[in-house]
Amino acid sequence: MFDPRDLKDIQELGIVAAQVMAQIQVFEQGVPALDVLRPATIGDGIIDCSADQWRNWARVFEQQSNALEVVKFVPASGAATRMFGFLFDFLSAFDPNQQRLNTYLSQPENQAVATFYRNLKEFPFVDLIRQRIRQLYPEFKTWTKEKRFYTMVSVLVQEHGLNFGSLPKGLIPFHRYKKNIRTAFEEQLYEGAFYAGSKDEVYTHFTFSPEHLDGFKREFSQIQSSLERHTKKNYHISYSFQKESTKTIAVDLENKPFRDEHGRLIFRPSGHGALIENLNEVNADIVFIKNIDNVIVQEELPGMALYKKGLAGILLDYQLKIHQYLRTLSTKPEEVSMDALNAFLWKSFGMRTLAKTAQEAYQLLYRPLRVCGVVANTGAPGGGPFWIQDEHQVPSLQILEGAQFDKNNSRHMDVFAQATHFNPVDLVCGLRDHEGKPYNLMNYRDERMSIIAHKTHQGKPLKALELPGLWNGAMAKWHTVFVAVPIETFNPVKTVNDLLAKAHRPLI
Image 1 (cartoon, rainbow, N blue to C red):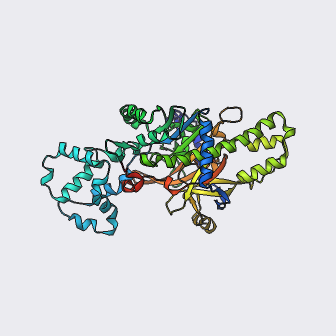
Image 2 (cartoon, rainbow, N blue to C red):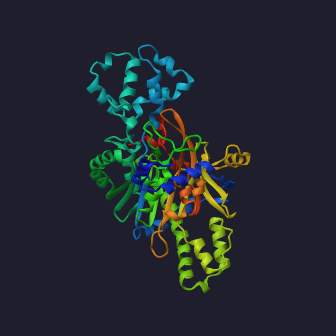
Image 3 (cartoon, one colour):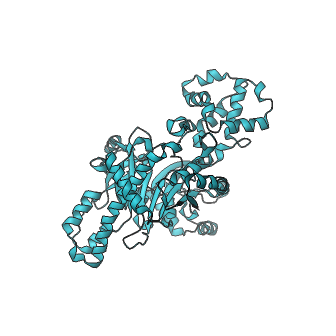
């Protein structure tokens, strides 16, 4: 199946032909359907805390944080292209010399553009557009309204202007304050001072795309002193790239290796699930995980940080109990009540597998722990918390994406429709065991949760294999705790118009 050139390409990725053959076998056999039981709900897999409980859990974390190595982990490799997608469509569809802008904006399918137009002066980058236009088009003010708006959009997203459509989302200005504007990258760093630090040190790890690294480095060099002055913290950033070895082979519709116009095999990035390898290399006791675009303005941070610290306090409480059991099982197993231990596993994680021996109990307990904030389901696309059953009929709590549900299975779709909560990617993870040693996170994945996606290459259809998602199958065999958090803690920016929401409009 593979010629010498293929084998050389495979080797250069850092993998072997057997791995590629195993991926092709997944395409041929399909991904096993998940045995979905029911959505996790309040009282059945999701914990609901009172205001007093949140404050108590936050204090638990605050009292211990200085003795812990704490890191914030932020996936930040995504480009902002989709964020400006409807503006690219506008540039393709609208002719400023032939069409009337008011007519175009009045059409129902163009309401996103209309919203952007009506609120243009409210966006944090509007002055940057104006500055660039003054440099490029001295005669701008004499143009028609149609040409002026078309040019402003073009300057915003295209290469000759600010080129925001090609930048990573982390380098897009999100918030405008009186004295400065902040990118999503800067807001993530600023936010870290409120909960993701130890003593006066703040450690943040970003996963970048290699081509964007220099841009992030320049940004950090420009903002570091200001951040440290305002927060009175010392900032340390580290970064990593999605590994070439996590790419997966593409196949055609007959499951044969897909080749480009030169006859070379096509390997594609395998989704954010590949980042489990990056997370595995983070050296920390506690890791907060949050997407790059989920930030808020600075005056809202103290309230939001309460819930982040509260989630960490809950994690530390569960972790203390797990570690106490593991230490006793290692040294004085006869002192462990199996009834009490099994009750703990059942009540905490829904494990109905009863441990009969100390060895079985140790194996059930010994795994990483994550506490995941979930918000009330508002109908947004994406994943949520569910109960599933593994191949041994053992139930567990999992974050599942919509793509993991079989749309031809009416029961699957009924369960999906009954979901009450949504996954905002608000995780706190415990990565070290009772002896202080890091878990090998690669041992706790469920390969059954891979996804086969349909894509195209130069107009030709292909099938791509996405590895189990970072907070989906890549963490499937972790201990999982779901906790309801307020919807106000979830403020992603999926399109540029999301920057008009209250959470992204500073009062200062």
